Length: 204
Image 1 (tube, helix red, strand yellow):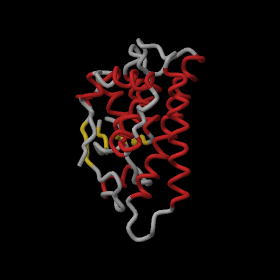
Image 2 (cartoon, one colour):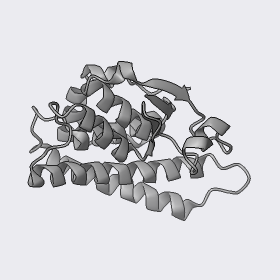
Image 3 (tube, one colour):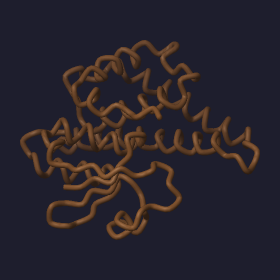
Image 4 (cartoon, helix red, strand yellow):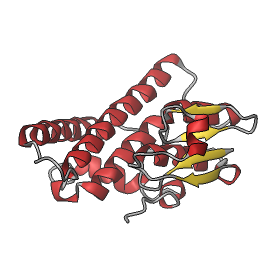
C-alpha cells in the first residue's frame, strides 16, 4: 500500500497510529507531500482529484481518502484487532469521539492558516471564535475524560490524542493542560504507546 502523507498532518498521524496498532505499518509506503501545498504533485492528483492528504492507494490500485475511511479499510484487513467496535452502541460512541476530535482538528487547522496569512491582516474576531471553540472542546473533554476506560484505545481515542498532540505542536501557548488534570493524565498515558511515539510530528 502507498500513503500520500505528511508528518505534520494530524489526519495522517491518525492513520499512521491506526496502522501501527493493527500491525500494518510495515505494509505501507509513505509518499511525502507538503501539508499546505498549493499544487499537489501529479501522482497524487492521479489518485485523488481533491489533491488532499491522507490518500491511501491499496495494493489493488484503489484510492481511498479521508482518514476515517482509510482507518475503516485498514480495520477490515485486521478484523481480529478492533479499533472500531462491532457492537452498535460502542461503534457509535467511538465514531462520535472521532468526529468530535476531527472537528476540533479542522478548527485548529483553520486557526493556524489564519495565523500564517501574510497578504491580509489577521482577523481578530475569526481567531477569537476559533479559540473559543478550542477552549469549550477541551473543557468538555475534561468533564468526560475521568470516565474513559484506561484499557481502551480505539479510533475515537486515537483521534482525540492526535488533536491534543497537534494543539501541543501549534498552540503550546494556549496551555490546554492548565485546569484540566483528567485530560492531561489521560493524554500522558496514551502518549507512551509505541504507536504514538513512532508517529511523532515533524516539528520543522
